[in-house]
Image 1: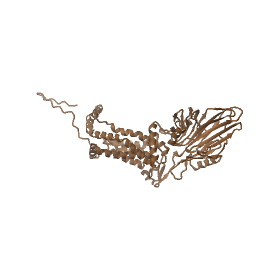
Image 2: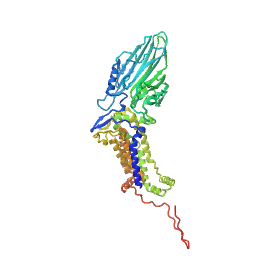
Image 3: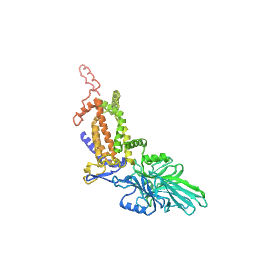
Length: 607
């Protein structure tokens, strides 16, 4: 009866995991990325993911974009990281692609597009300008003149416009070899009276990001105000009517996708009023700041310097801008979460290994080796504790049988046994607990770091930030259907389940039959759970399991008791549930009392 109950319980738990995990995972443990490739008729082909940029690459969208770009005079933008153009109508940076990041893994894949001009689908742009009371300031339809035809590193371009009322507006634009634009906004007053000019900068996008926002990943409005990062608002908040405003000294604000960022950056030594806005009529989201008004006397000029970032959230580059340009906490563009203090060192180590080796998959294997070496002394203590626990199993079973109806007394006797034998049952848990933050840090790095995007390992693993695409569920692509995410179990998750099963076989068998059944199905449950996660995370776990098995084998040779107990357990009958021989009662039986004359006394029963 108990076996039937346990079997039903195992089946129910397996069904819950199989069908309920997809919902739980999507809400609480989002995977790194959708697959970057798929197998069709046994051939691996690239597919486009939502993180391919805010702009659509569909032919109608591309045609409308090309028409919008060709409808206005432009200055080319050419850098090692960016390519596009500056719209002289409105002085807008509205045509940018990221040349070092492709949309898909295909050899002929176009680059990721970040900015698109107004009037095109997925419009997204940045702009610098002025406002002022009683001032004829340039507007979105103002056509500027430029003193050059190409904006490139070391080749700045100055835009100019005269309002015909004595004021000359100029924007000297510079760009580096990364993703940073620097704007020197100059207004010269040749009029008869003073003017009040207020410089501003903005980024404006139509629609929300294609990347979902989740509890482990913030997508949408982001900024640093007065030295503190703010992830409190998302696109839904702005669309619902929220219009957060901030008075800040320095800082920055903009919109972040999973891998991409567009942000405006006021002068870091002055005050500015920043805000996020939403226009319901056009579904446009805007982040902007306004500097303090400057009073410009006749014959004088005023210059205000600000910046704009438009590109990939590459960690080393963000830190460089923080250090070199003094931008407050610009690395906060990446939402590391609560464990930032631990994740950054893991990422730096992984990135250093990649720079030395040239393959992120091999770098993850080396990271696993380093972690195992660091935890090796603790693992030795863990296995020594396992050996001691094996020796104590008959005594523990005797206590459980004797006090099975008195749970508090059973716990007291167990603790007493541990103290007398100087055994800590929790010692074996410490290495596992230390692995958890490392595992979570790697999970976040694979999900957040653009450096991991589209990074291959070997064979069919062409993107370590995406799940393993090769699954036997559809016969490796020979069956014409794509299995749902919770059934698309790749080769790496299968290896994960097998190596974990082998690892459990080397551990002490639980005395409780229910625990034994739970441990029996756990490797296969985790195989299903881990299937939608990044291949890099699966690779880390498989390698860690293999190293654990090798370490267990080696430590068996140093702890003969462990090896003998394992052999004895393996020799048991298959069900492994037969109770061990009864242990002798620790208290000697009392001698029977002498019989009284005339009537025998019944012996007192011992309790």
